[in-house]
Image (tube, rainbow, N blue to C red; front, side, top):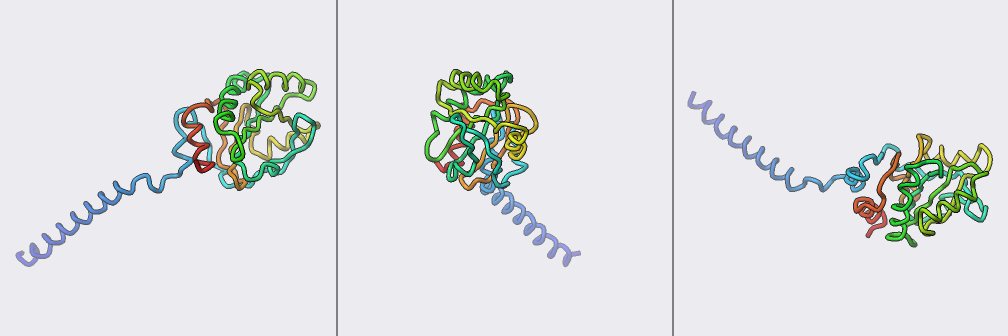
Length: 200
């Protein structure tokens, strides 16, 4: 019995010491390996979906206000926030001022908000006017190409689940996250997320 106690007691103390060291190490490194984007998926951005993270940007074209076809590749080197919206969509209209505020706060060489209207081509002039009213003229107008193939931009970017849908791409043209539904893009969390992506 004495021999058993001489082995058991030091082994028990060694186990306790190891458990304490593990607890101290875990507490000191907590959060160091957390995903820098996932941590913003709370509050105003609680619906951030990182499922398709790392997917290359779609190449389907869309159209600028002058009628020129553009693709996401034309904005290479910028963090992009793509927002699919429509004038007939109440939540789309409600969130547009916050997108304009985010563009005002962070837009430039490193970041751009691209609001793509999914309105019918017959309503394009009204959509241009409405975007100007909702964004205070801050956001540039983009829309889908005419014809059924125009919707390829929506589906290829993964935004077929309803509107508004917002998709973020990093400076390398890789998808970061998607958010379906309305969000407050002027919220401090949204600004902090963009700052993280552009390296501020």
